[in-house]
Image (cartoon, rainbow, N blue to C red; front, side, top):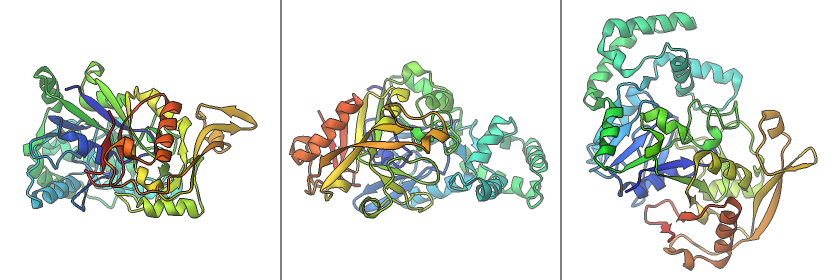
Length: 412
């Protein structure tokens, strides 16, 4: 089987967790390659909700290799909570964690909380950004550093001095993290070697993106972005896998748009329709519980994301959330200062000046949650899907009509 990347095409929260869980049964390895426990991938099985933050979303299949690549920043205590949660469900995760993963330290969380009070980026305040900052500044701490207590404690002390933080004690942090490390050490290995060996053995790999393309630190709505690369390039830097081994890319998008936190959102709906989408779609952050901003689908952003990621097919999620709307709009182009654009703006100033131009569709006003084939969907919903695919120029392979694993339509 070909190796597959699953990438979010919007501002995250597209329903990647469900799609990954649905497809994971076909793959040998499921690999997280970036982000940290700011991610929240939700899987619903038999009306039970499981939320993953660090462990790949294929964990509910007991025979899968679950890999946390070097591009992920790890909070060991959060990771142990997830492992414990799986064990309580009777699942012993076959987990592999890269020695090169950078660690989220207690002072990273403190820095994140402090900065968010003034910057208002809309982070989860989990310390992810400051951990990546230290990585780029070449003063980060990786799991391998915990093999030498003296080296580990010395790095902590230098970082605390650099930030002028006095409320933490290096010795105490070292004691805490070394104790945590003993509990996860059995999972830690050189995942680059593991994955490249798997490829030589013709094993199949599913690459799991966290967040979404429009939150990418390079290609997102900067500065209102995450601190890593949830786009296709993040796979290579976050795992050590050459690009030639990524065979296909499945782009995941909602049938409408959402965004958590601050930043541009041209199609946002602030009235009754937006509130209705939030309630029907249960649009609250899996990590923070924050209400998501909701709006109409935005085609220029989707086309942009598809181009960046080389998307070969599309998964549309939450189609059922639109079931009771008499009419539905889709943004097809932008107007900025009187000019029409099909491309997204390149500066935050221009984002603020965007006026979305819409095409309106007739709603289907029928329940889609129990439908198993695309041809059995209401005609108006098929028109909606087909028109979107025509605008994007890529075919749809999966349609999700509910949160449960079995509420999934595979399109031939």
